[in-house]
Image 1 (tube, rainbow, N blue to C red):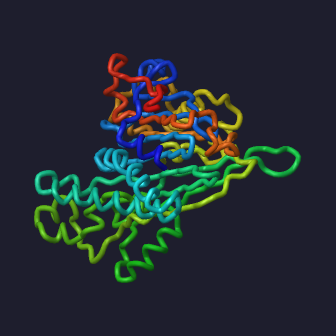
Image 2: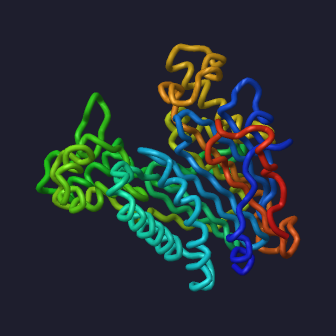
Image 3: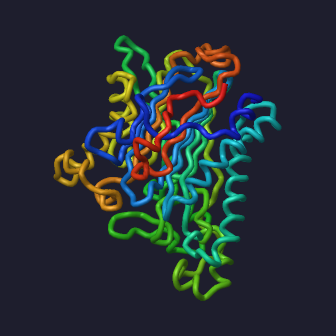
Length: 389
């Protein structure tokens, strides 16, 4: 954990290089970015991002040391501010609580998520009088960690982690196993949980135009931020806010920031984990995504998943994929959401914590771009470079 402490004050390289994306990593599409392949202690990883919104609301980061690997995918809504805040603070807080705890644990992730929420809410309290919109900004939050041969997955919202593992039997095919829970009211069990928590509110979940939403507004039930749905007293204190931000009475919070956490000891048949925002899962099933990774070369595999999702989005809209690549940010959101994918291969998990191809003090990582469209070839740093040795 000392290695994590040394790394966290530094910022990982973002942008595109020979292995990266932006304008160099894509042909004819300035709204995609990728790191084709890099090493971590348990194997390799690949990252890709496709921007659709006017401001990129997805953020992603990967931290690599000989002792631990961390992956974060943060899918913002209402604006990019919450996802960017999580991207800056969450890994640092995980490190702090892990040092206190003597290592990674489910409790470490629960504390780190809670502290991130508290810090963002404090920021919102300071900002909302001059920026009321910040009350309705939030982010889904998906984190994966490998420490001492154990995989931890913690999530809020509907980003998703899916494991590809070898099945038993003669064919040894790679099958999909979901490692996270979608906190989305499209799931009947999530709707039932909300009804049980709000027995005096028959309209806690509404179906509008075939889509289930909490109070007719938001689909996810857990997040960082969305303060107007967690601190209803703020809206009640201001007639202006009641009119513009939350034009409905709330008796109590209708969302939470308590993550679902799964702990899994890695096994020899575990091949890879796909961590992705719902921009991918809206277009591809767990099984389809796993099949693509299992049958593709590693280098650039995250971008292959992004492309597959864009192809499916184009098919649904009855347009050619080439048309998608020419659509500008903002308007592209009519075709697909921001898409962020990290594929983490696990084939060296037996050597994790013993070097795994890294020097004893080698610290590395990747940060996704703050905004793909804002990158230029002159401004980009190489995301494949070591950050600190």
